[in-house]
Length: 245
Image 1 (cartoon, rainbow, N blue to C red):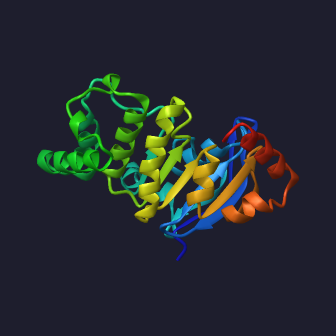
Image 2: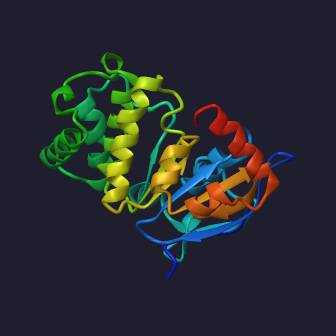
């Protein structure tokens, strides 16, 4: 059975047709990178997977054959984690509690279990010494690493990234990408919306290029970068690579 599939998924915001006949599938341990110009629907697509963009107008999104709309919110957020562009950490909670509290509420873990898992993950990303800090005391790169730990703490089967480095200063991008590289190497199944073409070239199983709510092109990295079939893809790559994406 295919691990993840979208079947003719369409989404409207009023009269605006945001996602148009999206169909794709991939297997566990793959990394799907989605790129495209602003307003192309790429972030809306992954937010639809996590039911954050409202219900589809038509079509379906399936995880191991189950339509995501049939899952409870708790099951959905246990199986699918998400890392946002602007971290979305609770400012009034410490780093440790940002990671431990969702485990207790969604997974029913004890305070001790949730804390142990949080500390283990923070150590993994080099932030064990920040357990008692508050988000405002951290750099953007550190906050994003904490956000990744929070998502990982739920032991998700699929991890979604919505432009995880675009809100960061350039010198902080590398530390977040390194964590993502390690996740990909460990076999985490990921869908990543990003303009970081170096990451895409290195770690993507496949790359999707979207424009105006449609998938224009889909290909493995070697083919996507060296022999894109569509002129629109070629133009996009020329522009983004010229600016160091």
